[in-house]
Length: 260
Image: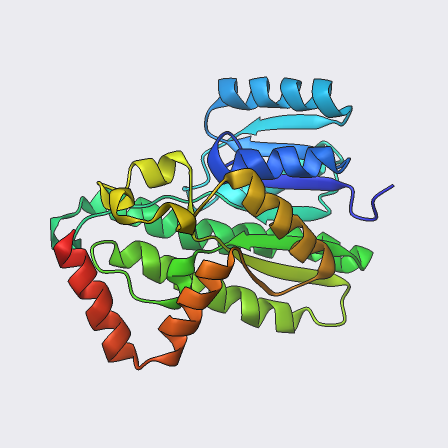
């Protein structure tokens, strides 16, 4: 029996979120699956329950509204479900120059990638602390470590996730609750496919399968690692980005963005 049995995963209906659901299910965890698409969630829940003999509760919700996290927390509490592990995976990308992008889409990105993640963490960590055990995974990105011209707001939102996770982890030291920032590189998901052609310039050796990422991220979470990077190539890229002066990294990324 897992000490941390029940896992809530946001953005669970596809991509990395769905892969996290499969990984945790294989390990025997019960699931609470959150996303907007009720039909996809119900189908996934049935599939996981049948394949792995675990409980899986679909919970259709839009995480963007300010009160969404509080509403989800209240509903879960009413159903008497204890969330032992929270995976803040829901997120979105917008690949456009800032002055050309749709402002409503930009605000939704900021609300989902930052506000929702913080609010979900705020509500669900309190019972974990009271029980003296729990884990949170925040999904950042390799973009957390460097500026990203042509999708500046996305990269900045993921930089926030990394900084927030590291500070939050130190606040929780000694409580029995750990926080891990999972920073994927380029992962074969629909988000990458919709990156406005950007994905064509990424070498295959830098791309990961979602299951490969989430299996390794699971191990990092269980160990209580604060930051997890997948694939050696991504680790070397981050070392490059953090070793050289910021003006140089910014300039190289800018040249790459203009070439694209």
